[in-house]
Image 1: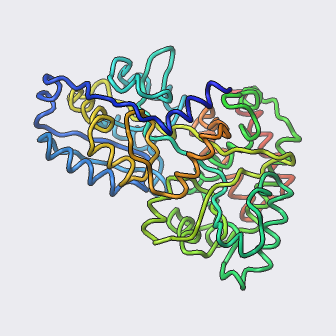
Image 2: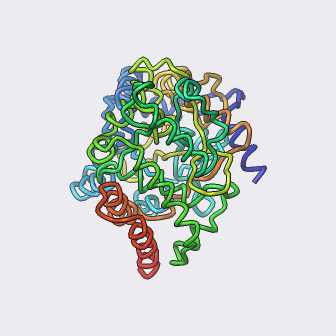
Image 3: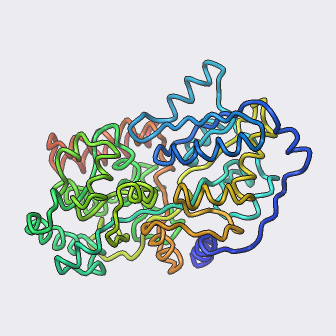
Length: 422
């Protein structure tokens, strides 16, 4: 575990110089033509398009960015449609093992690319590298530190269910005084299932476990459910839903959920550091940081940190040299560094990048990581269909009051057991 944590901390503070590995031949091959990139982070759509325009003009290439995710639908169905139409993008994002397996026949081996030696979080399978890490991201419960101070709540108490119950109840009693509509900004509509059945779900899978520990994941994949852990997790989900604005919870999109926190209408936000650009756009100047998830009765002292997704190159692309150069230049050029860190507000996954993000939440992720207080992202060991089509509706029913907490537990347990039989 210590080795893993040291690697992650090193990623976030690395300052080694990385010279471009692009050959003159590659650069020449990239001149002219078109390049299409499909990605799953709509919150950086404008920034990526702006960078792609600059890069395209510099290289004589027309770059098209397709951003699909959040409330605009999942990338999986669109990729399948494009594949069927013979119109696959040159570069596309995938989020983990199950997504890789779905598209492995179309993904190029990137093991010999020059950026590989400058990251420890590239996506690897059977000893080969297939994914370029988009960034290092993290999430816990984002909190308005100024608001908590006004309410007399110490963030250090936010480490378990009991701590959050007390804090949420106190904040709820002070809503008028604090000028908030809800304690938590949480989303649980079907279209926002990635908040519940991806990110929140990971609390069940990895909270409190050593980094890389797959014991809970492997047990659930076999249909073996730790009912005590699941029941405590259900208490956590119930707590978040109870203190959320019901309109945002049931019908709110990404902008509504993040906006409630950014404008001071909620004390907590269930999102990650990828919301820093939103905070900047909303001119949110209050102090903010992350606290651990309170999904267990025992105290936990860490947040969830990993590479959120990876860029793959379509091995059948007619623009392989161009696609490779696009990724290389993200890592090796001042323009690429500026885009990733200053414009998109991301924590780079590569050494040799001296810039640091300005966003408070990204800085909080760096602090947790540097302290070695991080938990894995394990949700991607389950298929997209299982998370989106099986689990997300269960969360949605619970949020809407259509099922009780006991029924939520029973349905979740049944879902794992049924999944194991497939």
